[in-house]
Each structure stands twice: as structure tokens, then as C-alpha cells.
Length: 212
Image (cartoon, rainbow, N blue to C red; front, top):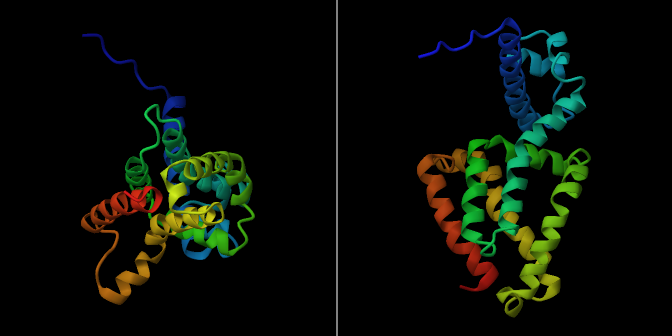
């Protein structure tokens, strides 16, 4: 059996650099979710990672670049899920969409709070990204709702409110989870609670949209 080729020094540096960049993104995501963009400094991120400020600039040239990378990493999987949902050969399956989005958010629970901070701050950084990525999908999804079974339940004027309600059902669950945990002592982000919420949404969303 041939021996594996030795890992070069350059490869080791590349892998080490990738791991450091991922640690920086993890720390930045948590801090941006807790404090928002304006309340987080690169010095805060560097301290959380355990590196010096200049080391951050080896990976991200500015705070804006780091924030954009955090948003890209968090939102891209949701965008890809929405794209797959819209392009499904057998038609969109709302239960599949719900389950996949819940899985993505469960893997990065801080993302919902980060999005909330961004929205409350005017969504200056996120709006261009969502305009380019999500607007075509939302337009297509709105068309499907308006021409599908939901048209018997909802007027054209109500469709945007239906979309916003579904957003709150899914993303809002993660946003309010810390408060709910403090008030009740139950953890909405436990594996059991997340599985139950997913089952609830898999039943609720089709009823909202299709009445089934």
C-alpha cells in the first residue's frame, strides 16, 4: 500500500490559517449576535479568539469584511435551501423546507439574534445581500402561493403578511429562546425541544399555506 504524500509546510500553514479564520468567524458571530455590529469591535473579537489585532487583518481586511463574512456563512445555507425548495422537480415541499431551515438555525442559533440586531439597526449590511439572493426566490414563492391552493384562503394583499408570519414562526423561535428559557426554565434549544418545534412547524406551515 503506497504511503500518503507528506503534508508540506505550506499546506500546514494553509490549514492552520483556515482553522484560525473559522475561530474568528465563530467568535465574531457570537459577539455580533450579542452586541450588534455597532457594539462590537475588532479588539473584542481578537480578545475572544486569543489573538492580537494585527492577526485579524491577515484574514479579514476590516470590520465590514468580517461582518460580511459572518453574514455570508450564516445566510448562504438558508439561501441554498430556499433555492432547492423552489427548484424541486416534484414541486416545493413545505415540510422539507421547514426541516432544513430549522436544522441550519439549530446549528447556528446565534444567527437569529444577529439578524434581529441587523434588522433593528436598519439592515444596512444585510439588505444588499438579501436583495440579490432572496428577492427572486420570495417573488417566485409569492407567485406560487397566489396561484396555488392558498389563493382560496388568502387575498393577494394578505400574502406578504403570510410570508412574514412564517418568518416569525421559524426565525422568531430562536430569537425569543433565551427569554423563554429565563422565564420558564425550559430550554427551547435542547434537542428534544427543537425536534418538537420542527414537528409543529411541519404541520402548521402547510395548514397556513394550503389549508391541509
